[in-house]
Image (cartoon, rainbow, N blue to C red; front, side):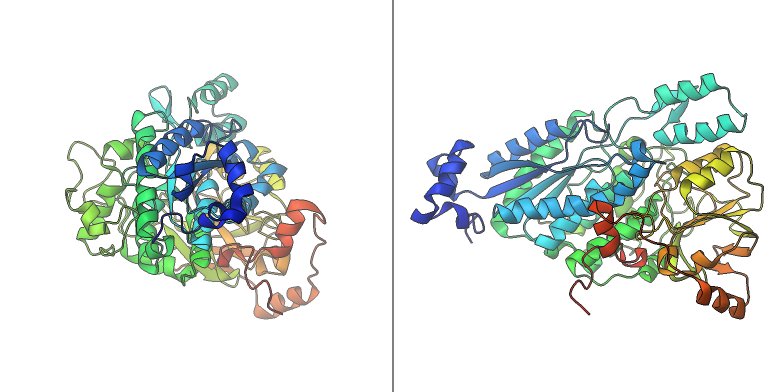
Length: 563
């Protein structure tokens, strides 16, 4: 098949002379009109360290595309810095940006009849936004991760941006002086790259490598290492080869490869956000996937890596210990990966991993031996009960007390809850309820990193529970349950909780329960009235109108034309 099988629509024939005239202005020569036109979706931005190094990678990717015989065309897409917008009204746009990124990539690629696309991303939503578009369009594609940030350092301890969030709680609790808070602030983010622990960005990049849509070892490289640029260039070359072979995303993104990705997420202790994003990616790829599938995989996959936020190390440490290929080889040897899944290189998983040792290096403790995992089972548990009939997501590793029953402390927003924590109004045994922060209610399903970090910083991480219809940063840990569905805005049980009600979080039993009678619950439901929408125009209003439940991935194109 011709390499320009899509772009010939704009380059071939007398009638396309005006089209070619425009392309000539961008550098096309006569011989280039028969080549594959390859989009480079560049999320370069100086608004976040996660993305400020991407332009250099875009240049190297173009070199790889040209070296493979393609014609690159660079276009921009957006990012929202989760870390900078965290705790503010602006954070409502973070999850929304996932859809904007996906739509922008689809628009550019299909609008210009591109033969393939290489997407480059850094901050959290770049990855799922790119992959949703890739799965939706089903044109040859590869994802290039911008790379992780190197850790900061203070008093011989590694720092990440989460260290700064937790320092706020510690300062407000009187545990550290303001001078120490400022030292942590100045040292937490020393350069370019995405947040350093196994937070959402590194989780999603690792999962994409495991799924076969990124090159081996590319997901844990530092943004500032030479290998990252070399990998970007190689990715461009590999993509052109995939175009020649018509190796399409839906050949790679299958039920089996998604299961591989989820298995790796469990093994590395990845972010709760991965649940939300993979539900959305599966929807775009038309692959069946439900919340309960995560629980099934969790039960059989151990946590092998000692990584922040609940562990000690960062992604660059994981890279030095063998990276995602080492983790995958261990899972493969124990029949926890599908070996026959094809990857973007054209090799199967088994072929890709054939030279990787079965056990991690002996001189490190970042990747544990199979016989000594961090935890015997995965960490992302799906909880259900009358408080979450569709389901909720809990990150249960690093929690000393996996069950708690206590009085509800009810807050109608993230800000209300944070103010209460910092004012020392939260006591051991309390269960904080933050509601109307879901996909529709927020809208935008903000991350609750500020309150959860403040809880940790105040020394309450093992004694206070928190539930929300919002979501969490990948940097969150503790007795926290997010993605509660149905959300408050549509009348979910979380909307009916009253101050002082007894709530049970029981992770081993996978239970989230409001301890009142069915009669009382029915009476409250009958008297509940929805709140008016917070926004009636613009981006957030459109999102609130279209977005589906978090239990379905919070997608915005579900059953659009069904009555």
